[in-house]
Length: 74
Length: 357
Image (cartoon, rainbow over all chains, first blue to last red; front, side, top):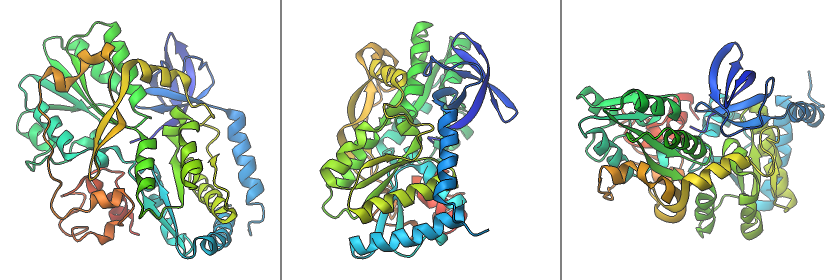
């Protein structure tokens, strides 16, 4: 039940945001991530954004995966 | 990349096995990991010495029979609207009934996506009492806390919750303090950790010397998390590592932790098969005590036995795997579940049944 889905903030109104989940849009509360802003990727659990996803960190993760598993046979 | 991760795993598992002198027992603490591992069919790809156990991280599974009975008692009060996440609908109380069957008998039970939907419902139905069934870990507690803060701000008098929240670190401590514990590494829950950060897990490595990796939920995250655990075990240097750093900063989410401190206070919690553990849960704080559904409706708590023959509790403690249970796949299936590990969509038994070993 600790499922959380990442999405991108398209608009912010007070402490709510419209979040785009790959084309599906939903209103999400920003009460728990007050610093989140337009174009941020947020992790959403039960109608609340619970964390802002670092895009640099996401890219760093991909870079690490590529580096660790670079010797994959194709 | 996945095949490279798996061949790396083979090598690391052999090294870790040399260290442990046999099987390498790891535990995925979180039910969402249980489902992700099963859905990707990873189990059959794991190298032989590696054994992944499912831990006590499925909220519905760890909710005690006594607490389930309270939920059902609330649903039977005339005029009460029960709002809940869908997972709770089919968990049977000691009477053999569940929320679904009470609904069929006329109880007003509604599944919501967010506790905010329950708050909106209370605002729209001022003549009715709306109860939200609060179960979950540190991921869910702040979300329900924030919904309660909104309800309080709006002065809603007809909204209340059951505060049956549980905390992950005390559950880990319980597993570790058992002398028969054989888990040598924990795949830690990514989204609980997004809230609480890394600090609350440090005792696991310092006091018990058990490896810890906070892990994300994509298949490659999971393979990498396992490899990091195996590397820690084979090197004999356990630490709390963060594979899921794109979502889990060292300090977690300070705003969410603040909401939790305001709305809740640490309390004893009642765990299935484990019993009542002091400091392992969250109750409503004094400022929010008026929102406590159990107090508002004066429901008496009674300890209740678990379903006969059900091994759910032992499975949650990593002592058994689902096929060890005599009921598994016979008397107990997802369409007619005996225990909560089969009821919950992310329970270990449901995952084994749906995807096989």
